Length: 356
Ligand code: NAD
Image 1 (cartoon, rainbow, N blue to C red):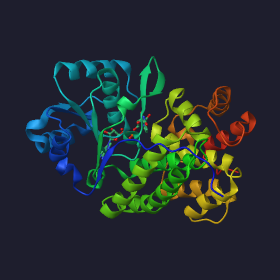
Image 2 (cartoon, helix red, strand yellow):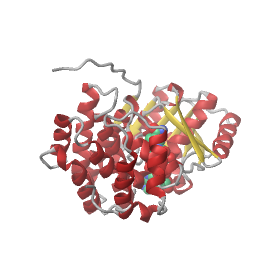
Image 3 (cartoon, helix red, strand yellow):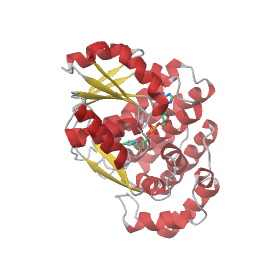
């Protein structure tokens, strides 16, 4: 039986092709932009300089100061720089951190964003922004920060190291898995979520084996795009709450924290909506909902992702503290929050033991 639902599509112009970033000048000119500031991290400044050549007279240069989690001081300087240079568009070339800086500028100035994503994090498909002040990250939603144009060029991901590709890909998978049991789930997003999971499940092991395999890169980017739409369209649940605590309170690296924790949060929910969880298990190469947690754990092992939260910076008292914070102010979840059970599972995740 079809359930009732509400679905609202976000207005983004998407280009997806190998080499698509070489068309950046004509794409941005068609959008009416005339003076475009390219944002990158310091590590990707060289790629930014190449983009200056592609943009020709539309380029207002590179601003290579994006860092993880958008500290307020970094955002304020970037806003001042953008206002001083009379630009009409910010082009974010990079992962979630760079797109996050473009969003901070858009929020304050209303300047439109074009994005060329080079990881699988999915921020380019959402209206969510984040800012960090005194080690506290606050997030909000605003249509102003949604990119107007997104150019996916899988060739640009060939330089993303295998281990970052693997955890970034599992970060994308987490968006899709949680969309399957979101409070406001709907049929089109569930379809996209399963397609995203299938694409990532197939592509990521191949990327780890052969990082230069362009077909696998293209398939992973396709999955990441779909997963980003899921993140931008429906609400998230226990997994994202746990990861926001791991990142916000314990400063764990974003993509790795998502990758490790997904096996345990999916395990926690695997008996909730059994037909959907059976489908998820089958998409991950298994049979039954009872295998969901272990299938994700096994995929992480295959991808060579660090398996234990202790290895990426969680202290020994972390599991109980994360469970306490999560249950004190929970997001929606199809299964009620159980602090004791979560402490037990997070202790397994801390040690890198399989979910059980
Ligand atoms: P990132 O943007 O921090 O990138 C990680 C590192 O990889 C950086 O040094 C970057 O320069 C480098 N890099 C990126 N692409 C590369 C490539 N193709 N080749 C070589 N090096 C490359 O990491 P991320 O995981 O993409 O983003 C994490 C941030 O994004 C977090 O702050 C997270 O909160 C945010 N995020 C926000 C949303 C949202 O909807 N607002 C969604 C997902 C993530």
